[in-house]
Image 1 (cartoon, helix red, strand yellow):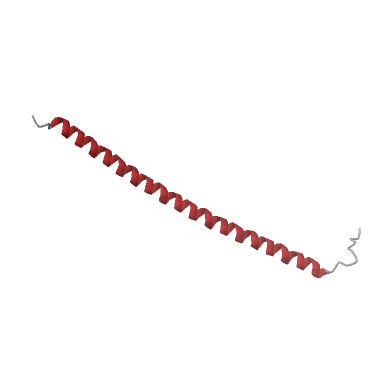
Image 2: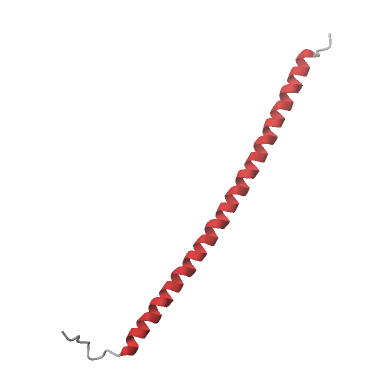
Length: 80
């Protein structure tokens, strides 16, 4: 069986197709790198926000404890 190619087919067209395929693969790799960079930055920002929230929760707990100590002291040490 003999292969039949279109009349306008040239061996160079195969090379051009291979080059275009490689270029598309490179674009996909670049897109993946950009996406991973964005995801990493968002993950780091999320970790920063979580740390800040934990810090603020600790401050609130300390302030509430201090208010409780002051209230207890006011009750226990009332002047007679």
